[in-house]
Length: 431
Image 1 (cartoon, helix red, strand yellow):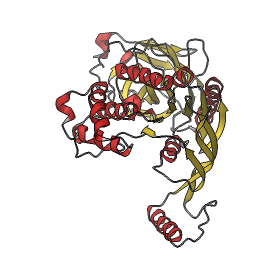
Image 2: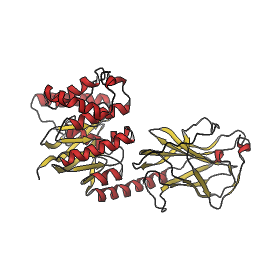
Image 3: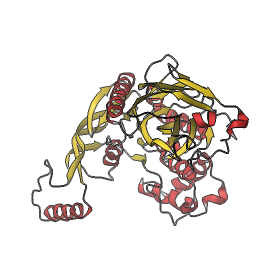
Image 4: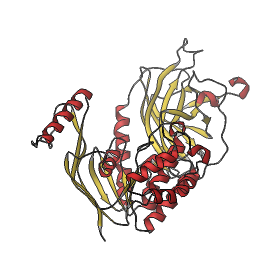
């Protein structure tokens, strides 16, 4: 089978300082124009390697999964393959036409209409006007954008509309290679399912795909091979299953290391936070609508009266859901010097994506001279929810303001307090 993409010892560096970055860029361009050698294999002041010594090849008709934690270099590598960026070291060989969906709105002119942007993107790929006109209705229909909106400037589009149009353009203009970043998570469940079906159809026709995703189910279900990036370097390469197993191990180790560093608060510290699945295994990914447990380990530095533990689940730095002892009417009357608090989440109905967990410990102002917090809200860990079909039922949050920090919903949950004395309040006492 023919190798359609070959990446040979590719490295890419950037500068952390804008002025130096502009200066380095001007210097390098001038040297190239004068046919002078510009050393590329070492770092100048303020520079760092975003991609370092990456090599792989991909045969025609195969699908490669690219995964890694945030900042691993996945999007940078896609931009290098797409030709948006130029490698500082190494060589990339592409044998075919590339279609890409890397960032929201990439390749689109915001002041032009959806129709005009389709024509421009297709022209760049070398299609004639006749070919574009033949494909136009198919692109618009697949995107699900109503025809009156296709004539509007795309700056008026929502992020979901942009994602749908971008994917529809990329996949329907018959490229040989598709580069898809995890931007597909912006679309709704129905469109994501339709998109993955289209990817499989494209692959069956001999198309080659590179898919960036954090979700093991996406990588293992659709990809023939996978690569795990960490700090710009390849740390695992092989079958999708073996690579995602290594990704899970490394993610858990990073969380464990970070948890040991997170000690704060004068009165109480949360020393670590873990996610456990229904089997009691520490995990970083959960199946859609599967119950899971959040385990908080704490340590007291002073005597505390009636602490309220709270957990906030965020997505894209916005609060999504919460579990809080104050809302649940649970008052701890005697807290051991160290131990753990467990919160079991029952069938959470969270949408697919990556979520962060924040934890706080509130004080009861009535018995703590007005003090509001023993430990403020702080991010401790994150987890991913794998794809599934959303239900329409959500629980509204209580009217209680929880000291002005308001999430969208309260999930069905229960607290497990081992060796901790507590009391519960009635609904009338909570109001």
